[in-house]
Amino acid sequence: MKHTLTVLVQNESGVLSRISGLFARRGFNISSLAVGSTEKHGVSRITISVEGDNRTIEQLVKQLYKLINVLQVQNITNIPSVERELVLIKISARQVNRSYILEIANIFRAKVVDLSNQYLMLEVTGDPGKIVAIEQLLMEYEIVEIARTGKIALIRESNISTELLKRQIKVNSLRT
Image (cartoon, rainbow, N blue to C red):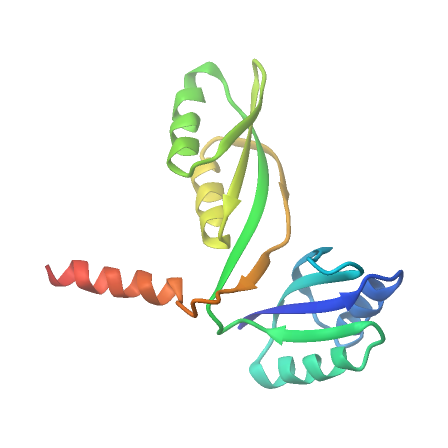
């Protein structure tokens, strides 16, 4: 199962190296990693996506707390949260395909950030599922390059799970 961990750390040199080293020593492959400053001066948030069972992830969280400069660790996998990623996709966009690509971009609310005679570059922001969906649709065309950020996430204070809401809406629509 894929887990999402958020780690608050003191923003000092070497902290990311120590954290990634812990994952490497334990044989974990990090699927996604994003680091950025927070609202507090000198504190950064690291968002990590990693595969593992619940027990192993619990042990990993305990090990993270033992590292210098780690302030807080949360496994937010099953906590209602907002998750986002950013991807830049460069596509070979010949004149014959360009309108189809732009239609897909419009449906996914992607922004055209660069355009030339041969290529089109899209910026897409959204939850990881949205990113995968647009990538799959654009595979029909020639994707030249992709640059993808790691997932970032914050816990929803409303405590409402959008996945739960989506399932409920789907069930209700099937009933009518």
